[in-house]
Image (tube, rainbow, N blue to C red; front, side, top):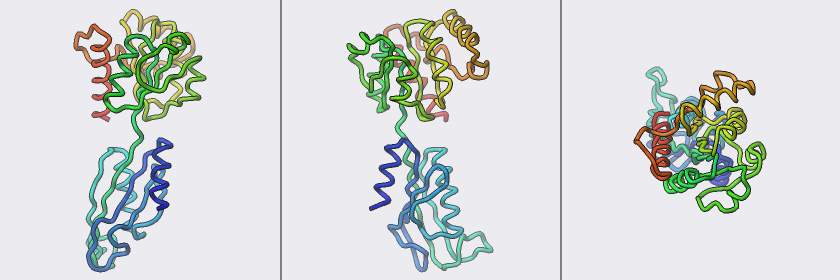
Length: 253
């Protein structure tokens, strides 16, 4: 069916979409059980579940489902518009809304011991993983999980773009690398950018960013030091603290 082909295509493009399905109908309704419609994030649709005011309300609910990432069931009586019914067909209809959201990507900057541990835990948690390092020899011998990109970060971002469903985890080897990388990341729509390091290191990175003309508002997007405070020491423990913070961010958004 065309609708399933388009659903798969939209998911592959990392775009959110809602599948709206009539799961029950009684008496006279515009579409019977099994009718389907896709609602895209811009409010456009594919196919129809009946049109009119009812469909308009379903589209509104579908856009809310994209925002809160939760499925929902809608029950409508199509009898009396004066009492708020979205139609006069005389029947009842139930529609189920299933939001399909892009898989969250953990974009790791730095392929050292901590980057490896974060990649493995991220993969185990079901995230899509991308890992970047500018050191060719490190990338060539990387044994973690994920899609590996090397070279300059600007080139890496062309191969593996960052979108609003990406969480950036910067665990690089020093402040200079952070200072070179973060201006590129801050130009992306990433909704979470976490940076590893001490307050002293952050002070150095912050000065580098300001020198490059990065605004205070943009700098405030960076969460540092990254990770929940669990007295982590080993790379694996640090990875747990980092991913715990990412999960907390996901659950709060």
